[in-house]
Image (cartoon, rainbow, N blue to C red):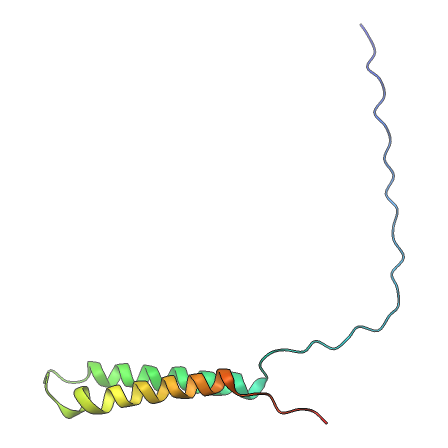
Amino acid sequence: MAQQPAKPVTTFRTTAKTTQPEAPVNFIFNKDNYKLFIIAIAIVALGFVLMAGTTDIYSNTKIVVAPIVVLAGFGVGFYAILRKPASKA
């Protein structure tokens, strides 16, 4: 039997970690934005619950109040997304 050539040995070097201080992570949204967004989701959900309401198709709640509540929830959501976080000075 013929002998196969030996495989080359690979060595792994460990790289030394630099001890540079890490920069603080800046998120796009802060805690207040997330709270407002959760409130907006709750308002939209309330509007859809109002739309599902009673069996009366032509009730004022289903036709007038519920769409206004849903649009208000979307408005709060847009405000939560577009609101700039307060600067930490």
